[in-house]
Image 1: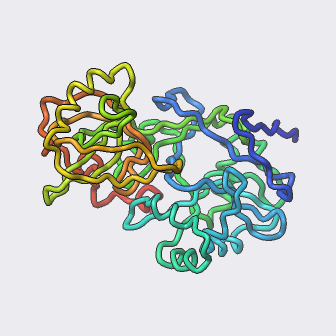
Image 2: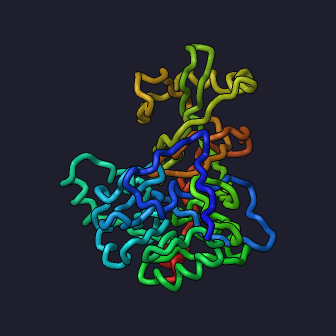
Image 3: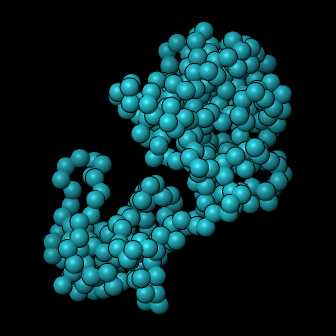
Length: 352
C-alpha cells in the first residue's frame, strides 16, 4: 500500500526521534480550532481530553512514550510502563495521558510530574497515577495501519487493542454536543471531529477540527497592572468571592488600546481608598513583571475564557463588557465551577 505523505507544519517543525521505527508516523496529527462541530456525514467525534498527547510505541524493542514535541515521557509517568505487557512487538498507538481525581480531570497534577527529581515522580505516580487513553492505532505487529482511512483504523483499534483503555468515539453529532454540555464540569477540554475517509496525516491539521466550549464569567475588578503609571493600564485584575466573603484573585484581562480611555474612566477612580491586596501570579517570562495596584471591588465585568486551571484562568481572558446590572458580591466561584451531576465523571464518559 502506498504511504501517505508525512507532513509537518512548516511553522512548527518537530524533529523526529532519530531511532524511531520508520514505519511509525511522526509527529502526531493536529486539529484546527473551529467554532462549531461539522454537521455533514463522514465525521467521527471524540472527546478532547485535558492532558498530554502521547505516542506509545515499542518499535525499538522497548516501550517508549513520546510527546508531540518528541520528548520522552515515560520517565515522568513510570506507572504506565506495565502497558508494555499489552502492546505486541513493533506496534504504536496514539492517545492522551490524563490524571483524574474524584472523577475530574486534573491538569495541575499533570504538570507536577514534569519534575527533575525521580523520587518525587515516583511518589506522585503512586499517589495520583496517570492513565493512557487510546484513540488511534498506527502500527500493529509490524503492519502499518495508519495509511488506512480512520473508519478502518477505528475498527482495528477496537478489535486489536481492546485491552487498553479506549477513548470513546461516535458518529452522532448530537451525542458529541451532549459531551460538550454535560462533561464540562469534569474538565473535558472540548470535542474533536475527524474525517473518517482520511489516513493518518502526521503533523497535519487536514480533516481534523476541534471545538472548545465558549465560556464567559462575571468577575469583580480587584486591581490593575500598569503599562505606565499612573495613566496607562495594561490589564485588569479579576476576582471572585469565596463563601467566607473573601476575594480570590483568578486572573487578568488585557485592556485593548481602542478601549483604554473608556475603561480608565471607570477604573481609575476606584484606586482611591482601595483595600490593601496582593496578587499572586508569577511572571512566566521572567523578570520583575509590571507594577500592580489594588482598586475598590465595585466594578463587575464579563470576560470570555477557555479553561480554568486550579484557582486561575489558564490563559488570559477577553473583556466583553461591563455589568452595571450586577453586584460585585454576586461574582462567586459558581461562575467558574458549573454544578456537577453526581453521575458525571471520567468513568461515565468512558462508559465504565
